[in-house]
Image (tube, rainbow, N blue to C red; front, side, top):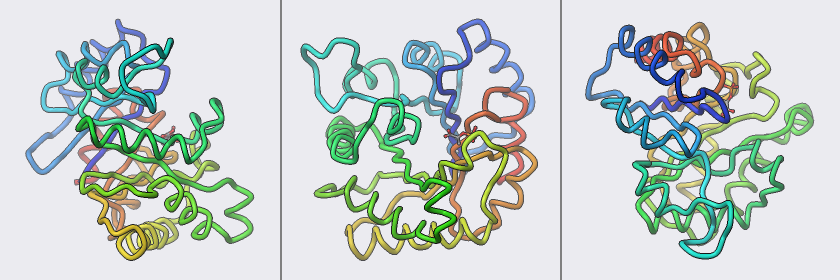
Length: 240
Ligand code: PEP
């Protein structure tokens, strides 16, 4: 079971202290729980110091290694700062930076090469959902992004774009079915078994108890509800 916080471009440094106090005074942690936090790049090393027993990750990396790539952060630099995983293919990056599957494919490859566990996001638009083509859409994203990739440490996050930050989620059985399709597709067509398939999109401390009843739902990637240490602690407590 895994729960990962995606802080996006939030939480300026002074707030990390209060997040940490709120989180640790409310959370029940044990060895069966793998909890990760992906802060903005500049806070990674600070988070490694403050967030005991949590994994710290990056929200993106460059598709290239060290060199003349102004403004980019390589897998090696993220790892040096203390990151142990990286979120790739988030729909906000795909949209804001016009990131295509071929680029995500290169980023997955370099993350694996540098021992940074990839957490790769997939998900359909509202239009695709309404047209009933979610499974086909997600499988074609999987095919493009994982072409030629072989690894055992890949985490997949199914994040319907229309659910991110909207307060609306698919039904638990719908998510469960998509996760089942993702697992089958990876095993039968891409020849790897993902370490976990997480769900992301408007997860809260209220709805996570129900969502986790889906047998193929292995955990969550949490945006908005992870920004408050109390609320993230309740999510961690409620889904184990
Ligand atoms: C996300 O963007 O990864 C996400 C899951 O956001 P939220 O929880 O705010 O919907």
